[in-house]
Image (cartoon, rainbow, N blue to C red):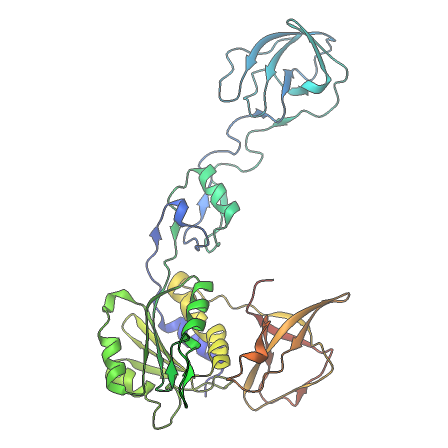
Amino acid sequence: MLSISEARALIAQTVHVLPPLRVPLAQAHGRTLRESLTADEDIPAFDRSAMDGYAIRADDPATEFRVVCEIPAGTVPTRAIGPGECARIFTGSPIPEGGTQVIVQEVAQRSGDAVTFSQRGKGINIRSRGEDAREGSVLIERGTQLGAVELSLCAQLGKCAPLIAPRPRILHIATGSELVAPDEIPEAGKIRDSNSTLIAALAAEAGAEIAHQFRVGDDPAQLVGAISGTDIGSWDMLLLSGGASVGDHDFGARTLRELGFSLHFTQLNLRPGKPLIFATRGRHLAFVIPGNPLSHLVCWHLVIRAALDMLAIGAIEFALVEAPLGGDVALKGNPRETWWPARIAWENSGAKFLPLKWQSSGDLTGIIGLDALIRVPAGITAVQPGETISARLVRAL
């Protein structure tokens, strides 16, 4: 069986990155930048006033100044400032030649064109050309997620159509003759389909989109028909919920082979989520996920998300954080690498991971409040309370 790290390495070698696209700023929020953005000019592009007031020569010994011009924001100074002279100026206005200090209007006493100041101070109150950034400097790195601040800077730079990562498109099919829609009352032997809602929410969190979503019974022909009936150009990743194991009704691997996919692995050294299948056909990729919801979550955050990263940005972003194990119960080890659901508790000493008491990989009630997945390495006896552990965050703090 492959380890989780080996599975991600295989995905990195196999998955082809999708071509980037340009979108207007109004559509770029939350998207990942696929180019670095540089300053086309100095920022600020000219020396400008940081205050409303009067521009003077900082070394001018005069005690009274004559106002020789007024410079509203958005205009260009028409003359220089000489000794004993000043210019009425406003926040953002260009500094006239000769001006090296702005005296704030709160300390100015003006009578006609004559101005005196109750104090001068040492502050120049001028934003100098290039003090924020010099022409050619990189201001937003490739791979940055564009939030409100980044988009505002794009606007300031005139980058109105940034090159961004596309949203990978997912074809998701929940399999199982026992499944009914969430708004139905299940008959005896039936259960409501929760995985379709789970996958749709996880896709939205990852910046992907659901292109198609179906529910089919345990019928191989019906499953093949549902997949074949979609426009091949409308999706990048196929996800099959259920059918990953080796039971009589688990036909995920057989279906993928029938559709021309090449299987790269059919199980991982993972708990929960061991019978995860990964396959590709040209630039399309597919996963068959063990049907239980917790297995879905673990497989998604440890493996499937890596494939989405490769599709979107051509690199896998997989970071772990460390903190002590909280609570008073040790986590038992297992021959397989285990990822235990946990929430984060903040105490005076800092953050701690508190394991959640899930009963099985089909238990959603036990993982409410899930913040992270604790890594319990394969083959160890136990992780003791207070011991520093690694975890994968699944919810932003």
